[in-house]
Image 1: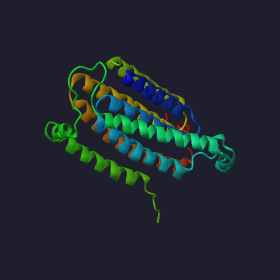
Image 2: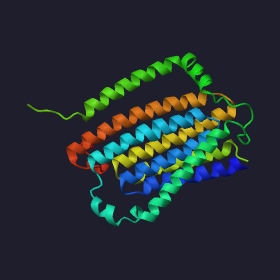
Image 3: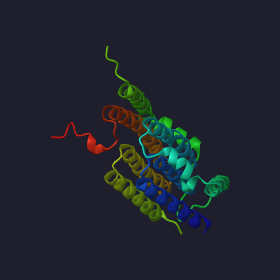
Length: 173
Length: 100
């Protein structure tokens, strides 16, 4: 019963945050809301007995890819609409909303810790045993999926070189 | 009781939101973010099916999808930077040089 409630909570957060992502005018808010959506999805992965995916969702998606987006948004300074004005008058930057935000962050952390401590036990109506250990995933990754894994490294190399070449400033002399 | 259907419905909703974002928004960065939403919806489907079938393959495919998403974000954002340098704009409607 508790896991049902948790599912609906995380699902509601994911849907609401994703809707707000495409409703925002300022891309910085979109990126931050998408991080909230990814946090909710990570909770759903814990409910699905996939703690490995939940953790790399936080580390790789929320921690690396979204930071890359945030870098580019701030680098391009694409939201020309009065950012200094925003900082002084914006209703979300007053003391009350910021305390509320801190409370929400603490609550999310407690929930995540609780969900991770609970471990892979009940998972609703799913029959059978869950394959959730990092050991099993690693073994499968380096035996059956060894070739795609190695191809992935080539892909990342190509993406890295491509990104550097595309974003390089051309020097005419 | 939460069953596989719930996860599939949630995934479908998220994918629909991402698709709507690609069509509705007029900002290249928001469009890339919508694509990330869609990729995450598909990831959720993979993990849910993997859990229902009792196999780890779904989680491994999510691993690969995340790698591709990282590569896509890096190259896509590099293209956005290059385009912004040329036109001082992020509106996709202003990049029509290849339009016939």
